[in-house]
Length: 206
Image 1 (cartoon, rainbow, N blue to C red):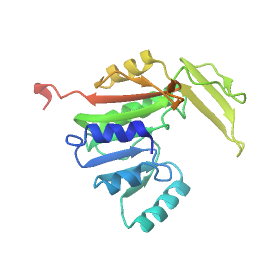
Image 2 (image 1 turned 135 degrees about the horizontal axis):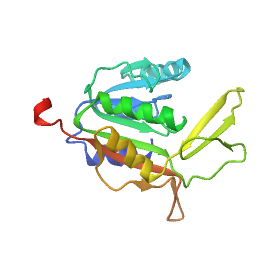
Image 3 (image 1 turned 180 degrees about the vertical axis):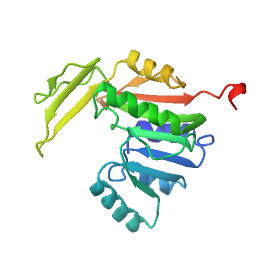
Image 4 (image 1 turned 90 degrees about the vertical axis):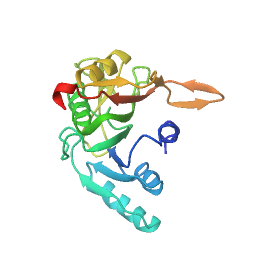
């Protein structure tokens, strides 16, 4: 699992709550460690293959979680239903419009005062040879994957993260860190690691 995500879990373990949504759970890379820590984890995954692989891993580990196939731009959950959300290297697989929609959906299902850990591609990420710039807000690239399918990848600026937070009632819990990995003691930028907190509802709306 990503070290930054596990550091988030360790730091906020006493206040996270039991119900965690792993947004884009893939093959269970983070869902399984969180379930083993005792959290009630729900995994939202777009691919049937990812869900099948996760289930096999859970059988081996003798743990279980709720696995839901769906699109993170249209979440099948009630508002304010999760204590925390984690989303690691998933939200940037989109153009700006799709990413903004997915962020809004995540904010809706997070309870007031809940925490949202997000790791997404930053504007400082290296541009790959097979990526082409497309017309969109900010920095969005497209490429054709091995299956012949067009993929979008949006690289986020800090201002864009601030914009998403303000529009959806969230705020930075701490200063975002742009760090993809550490090499020889030096931080290599390319991935934002951000912790958001959902603002409490105003008194007149409770």
